[in-house]
Image 1 (cartoon, rainbow, N blue to C red):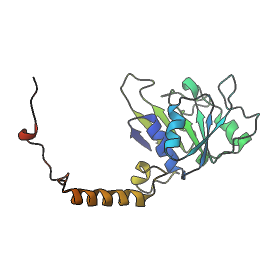
Image 2 (cartoon, rainbow, N blue to C red; image 1 turned 120 degrees about the horizontal axis):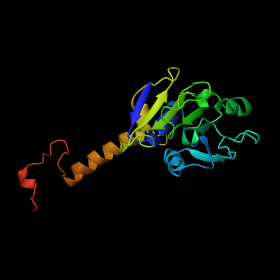
Image 3 (cartoon, rainbow, N blue to C red; image 1 turned 180 degrees about the vertical axis):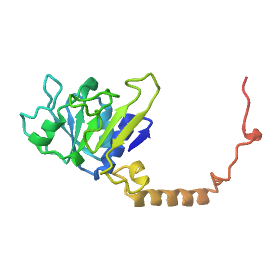
Image 4 (cartoon, rainbow, N blue to C red; image 1 turned 90 degrees about the horizontal axis):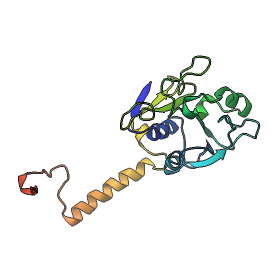
Length: 196
């Protein structure tokens, strides 16, 4: 299944949620990475740890595996990362891997497997390959269950009760301050001033 987002980093975070990421979970990210990636993960309430890569831009599996529940594996510039080596040498399972294929739209590995589709979830950015303003896609294997749409939209660090409390607080504040109901407020010509 493919799910579409405005940005690939949003797809990445949704993929982490689908894999069951919880507040404070550790995510291994390569040291050579765009700053938007760890910033987005930290914003989600996840703890980022870094792993080394080789001069060939592959995870350095000669070192000890990163101490993390999840791992982001990157296909740099559309060239396939050695995902099979990460699984066998470091012991990460499909359900722990997120395949970052931001630069490799329509690229394949030597076995003909489409990049971004080699783990339970993977993501691709349209705007890195095609001249468009935005667009990200999350590739989800059928083995990953999606319980509700809100599971994709709710950050891992925000318990559902917090959102409900916020809505109640805003409602109470609006009543106390005698603010108009947002739903009943209409924009009409008396509210608009023309400027020429």
